[in-house]
Image (tube, rainbow, N blue to C red; front, top):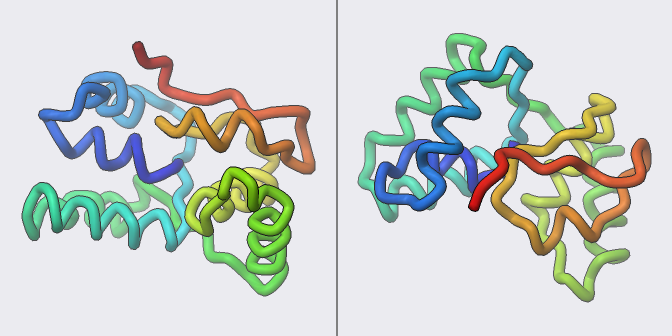
Length: 136
């Protein structure tokens, strides 16, 4: 999961709130986030929605509803490789960490609202990613 759907699910005023809330609520699949995604989500949540809203997401991590993918040295090397390869986008560390986690788990789907970076990047394990949720 990328930051966008997590934040939109928390922000009832976000135009993608319902789609993202439903995606999180209705999925039967295991949901993964990276530490950079959690940090970015906390910053957005605290600065735009107020301190405390992010605690609901932390509760989901604590109860196992959301799994945190820890990056090892190879993962950080791959992030650097992706950032260099896609420097013309530019591809940031947070998005690159999502790609690395998807590659690690062999996942073809990414929950994101970012339709600038993820459709362009070619992952190592599939020709391209399927992006969720479907939004207007």
